Image 1 (tube, rainbow, N blue to C red):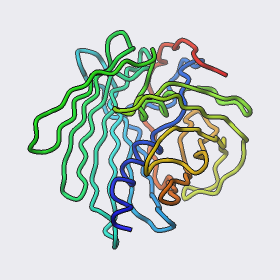
Image 2: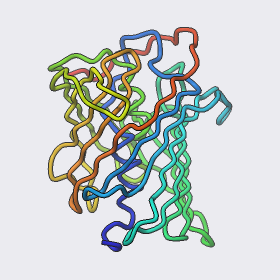
Image 3: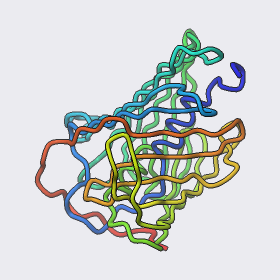
Image 4: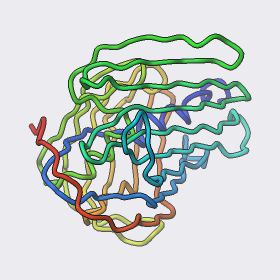
Length: 270
């Protein structure tokens, strides 16, 4: 299990828990804001394998622009057969344009560290990626992307700003730092779900991805978002090549109330 688990925990947390198909449109008030914090329990093959915390940080400047940092922390539990993992991913969300300006990832797995920085181009059609393993020289690469591409974290947060409707499908291009592909999500039903925070009125969504290798899905991912104005992911299930993973919301703190954000241009509704 140790060899199989290596990389799967963090890869899934940052590649699935924080991913979705995005359509930044419709509403003028953001479903999230600085100060919001969500903590998840992650189970792998039916065993609690770790936790993840997603926080919308205080407004800051990045590359000369005002952004909200979306900070994601993933940590493995001390259980047999699991590599020690303590990773951090920061996505820089431009709340005025509903797009991501780039991201920083610090990966720490089995005491091996790696940094990855992605900076989206001003035209929204390219990205500069810098990768560096500890003790090695940084490696740079440039990628051409479809206009309006988001990273995996920004995609979910953009989706949260959409008025979800049963039967509707949403789609958006996503860039992982090495691969670009189209992600799709369809709202299948509105139902009641029992959670650690009590019964929740939720939308059940089926999400199609194109991850490969250990993250390849045997079936589409299923996610449940609250049906209120926050649209918080409360449960996510995925059947990967190496087994099943489930993430459940355990604690949630709402962000500070802010003035309405500018409406974004509608895109890619199917």
